[in-house]
Image 1 (cartoon, helix red, strand yellow):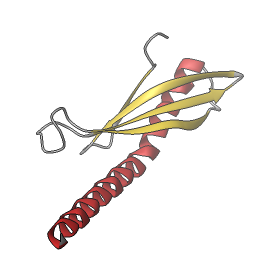
Image 2: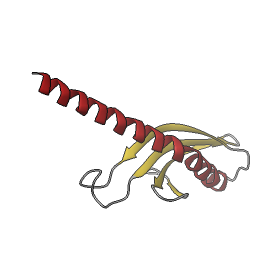
Image 3: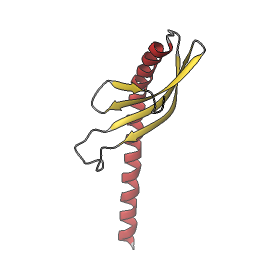
Length: 108
């Protein structure tokens, strides 16, 4: 029984560390994601006085799990408002870069 408790404690610690690193990754990428959405929104809305709001943030692992050789990404849905207009963007930021890509959600 003590062996099971030890294994359970290790599993819980591993999951907590993974969640913390995911949260940290999302927090690190969020400022550049917001700037990317703002730049795209300024162009699309033809407005230089825009503001942004993060509507959601998701940590995306490579296909096949975290130990695959793919790229980990952060995905944000960001609303941009200005000049009595608004729009939303899905912003993707890849790990290992300082750049993000903003696109409108499908169906717009």
